[in-house]
Length: 373
Image (cartoon, rainbow, N blue to C red):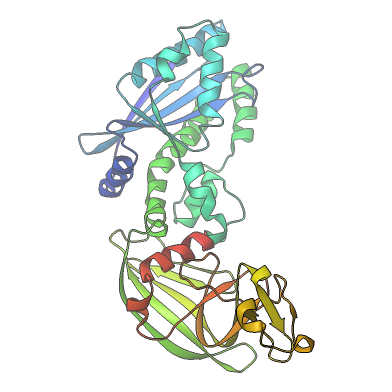
């Protein structure tokens, strides 16, 4: 077994520390493993990479099964032993897809090799899976998949390593038959960039903070714009100030809401509906529908209406109409909620005066962001 230590400069510690503090991580270790297959019952671990901050630098430790030991299981056990001793210093393990793969794999290999109780090593740890956090932004970032390398490319991170995990398995199998330094360096480089890349990916956490409401509204206004069909419409633009800058610009929309963010600023554009909408009464059994007026009225009033001009309301006809200017919402953030049709996907609320005074504007923006996510 070989143990390799590297110490690299890393400049974005402020963001990393903010990320770790938000997960109650006092001492965090970034962890990645390389295996000879995907099943811990039939495969083994041949390389472990771990990174952690120390004295303002990033320390990367790697444990590699170089084939010197005749017994492959003994060599794997040495890797796991070295890692278990290292983990004693940390309360948090940060991985990419590790909660579903790396951590269960490590535990099961320790059990298979009859090592110390893995519960003693892996219990009472805080696990942070970057995949779990960032995969929800795939469509916002317009990514084709949720691989770690895809997120890295989105951030503009360039890798010297060009191999994936499956290719590395074949390389290691060849290495076991014919060990050579070039193949060894390629395997170490792949694992090194995996674990180092995880630390860099923490920059994406700025999006999580923003979408969760870590921003202040610095302005808003309603303006006119030309629709695709050439008609003129109105939209509300809300400007948000972010305490943590976004690492890369992003633009996305869902056909209703549109977001553009860059550095410490983000803009939400929301179409304004002008016209007539319906408010549906919930207790329709207490109402009559008047076809001539196209509206519902309470039974206490309908008693004075000719029976020929009224009929019992149902859920779809129990409404009153309202003409005005409205903003869309997918959940009832602001009441009362109006609809174009019964059980319409989009609800609306009326805008009658100063938007920032009559509606909870920040809560409304968070609702939009969560819907986009």
